[in-house]
Amino acid sequence: MSPELVLLKGLLQKPQFRDYRPFIGDDVFKSEEHKFLLEIIDDEHGKNDQGDVSLDALVIRAKLHLNRYPALQVILDQLVALNVSDAVYDEVFETIKQRNLANEIALKAIGVTEGRESFDDLIAFVDGNKSTKVASVDDVNILNLDISTYEEEKDGDDCLHWRLTWLNKSLGPIRKGNLGHLFANAEVGKTAFWVSEVTWMAQSATRPIVIFFNEEQGKEVVYRMYSSMLGIPYKQIITDKAKYSKQFMDLGGNKIIFVDQAPLRTGFMERIMAKYKPCFAVIDNADKIAVKSMDRRDLEIHAIYKWARELAKEYCPILTVAHADASAYGTKYLNESMMANSKVGKPAEMDFIIGIGREEGEDVARYLSLPKNKLRGDNNTVEQLRHGHWAVALNTEISRFVDTVNEK
Image (cartoon, rainbow, N blue to C red; front, top):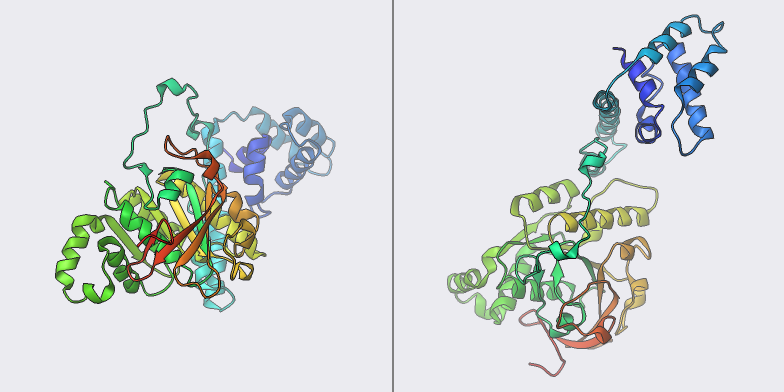
């Protein structure tokens, strides 16, 4: 069976043409007759954006050029007689696509050796193209719409509550599939916020919580997690590390998986998630995840958060963390237009967004806003607070956020 004929007949079908035509170069077809038939197929698909190309139409058009291509009649007869299964089509198309991808990887690798490409871009490209397989209709999850068959959701693995009472009233619990974003300017409290919340959640979690971290020194943040979990300052912790380490682990610190890695890459992070199967994950700073280079930075950022959404659907709720832009300095209540790097793509992927603001010269008070909130909450959430604003306090000595500026 000629693979060229299998390719040509398969390309008559619109779905296969859309999925695989970009990967079929001039080198795939050796004879002029095969190349000519491909030109006809391209032209016919160009005339019809929706349907398949008729084999009869291909044969009729090709026969007008028999004088020019002497071997064309034999090829047409073989094409008409060819009868293969979808599985064979898929196998041949996948082989072509894999060869094409391998060639691209090889060219990028040569570019790295010659200094024209960066190694990070090469790794990001490989991570982003781990599979060439196009999903079939049998792989799709068709959701059952009969809610009477749904199990009641229970607090626990897939339903986590916040330390801050206000977040429980406004957002409610977070569940598998939820993707949230936390943003603020430098030294306002982004890391302290997730440290405060993670050390609270870990105390009741039955599965690990994964932290992906590519910012400051990871060990410094570990001490902050100890302070937040135990409610004591750093200076006290270092007086008896063994004692406080045991207390931290016993309270739930042993469930926290702290991945201190820079740069972060999608493939590596997916392997971590698959290994630990966490109930919650934090990515700080998500904007720095290495992805395939694009012409515009906002497109790269959008790709990062589209990937994060897919990760949340597969494993657990995820909170991404990144910076606000310069317009947020000195502002109490932030809105999503103040997010750094992306004004549309990033917020579009989110189920909820939390902004942290601070006025100039303020040491304790912080101001939380919810510019986006698509979570459905639970019986304890308050609809009027869905997009509310709230003043809270940051106790920097123990890295904890508390509900009111008056609370100690």
